[in-house]
Length: 386
Ligand SMILES: C[S@@+](CC[C@H](N)C(=O)[O-])C[C@H]1O[C@@H](n2cnc3c(N)ncnc32)[C@H](O)[C@@H]1O
Image (cartoon, rainbow, N blue to C red; front, side, top):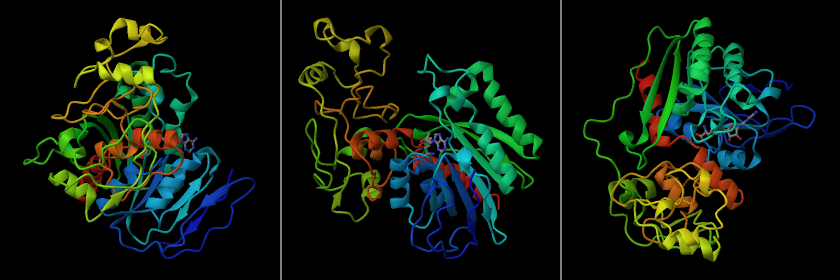
């Protein structure tokens, strides 16, 4: 177990290595008291949830992530947050002075074990499915006013709802008023139909109101999200590129701000027989559109689901950006997979947000993230309670 990091809400020095083989990554920047609340992000990944929290006025002081590539992405984009690259189970204390501000403990424990597409380890025998207990332990360690635990909707019926029931019960035992919401990202300005579940615990005397979609909101299509990004080829590997043209949708303008170049234009280098399969899939189609003779050597055919070899429809929000490399998600107009930047746009990461590590790690980080605009809506509903 590791010792605690001290944080007094002001500027900090690079932290000392905590113990043994532990490694702490931190910025040299100062953690200024800009936020209306102080946050700790558990299982922070690339930082989608933290970005939404920051947009809502939360100062995220500390984040914990065991994967060094995701942590590198996180640190690059959240310069003033102290990032611990560590298995969360080895951290034994946190000591953050909050200066009277409300504390929010938030994050998304691994969700693969609750996903309906997981037919092998979606059960109580999957040890990762018990990592929510770390949330409970951290709630005891830090005593936050609010808790926000995010996961996939599939947790509601994994083992007949056992995990969700346990999470709610553990929070209630600690005097949190608890509520949970399933929200679809496409209703909050994200060009993607993605359901996420948020369990909210509050000790402030009430439960924040479930965010409702803005009354003037229209869904953002794949075309609006991607049309100004550079044209790419299968296997594209140049990181930084200029835009293809002007940002002609409000969404693209918001993602792009004043930038003239952006990063992460990386596309999986698919074999020629895969590209041949792509050619047969129309917009909105999937693997069932590929002639049988081109799928003969496809060993997973019996396990195919509708998301395999799916080509995006330009006029609708995207299907879920999850494991989009493995699922062979196809660009709406080009016979290739999505670039990391395109996937990031469909998740509502602005273009200044850069992903680190090799292409496979970047793809995973983007797919694992909570869409920042959806997270922002959730945190705003908490902040409106203050
Ligand atoms: C669903 S992702 C989090 C996504 C993040 N909330 C976001 O919005 O970008 C879960 C993360 O938990 C990390 N993780 C899994 N087990 C862990 C552990 N024992 N300790 C720390 N991090 C862990 C994974 O590496 C992964 O990045």
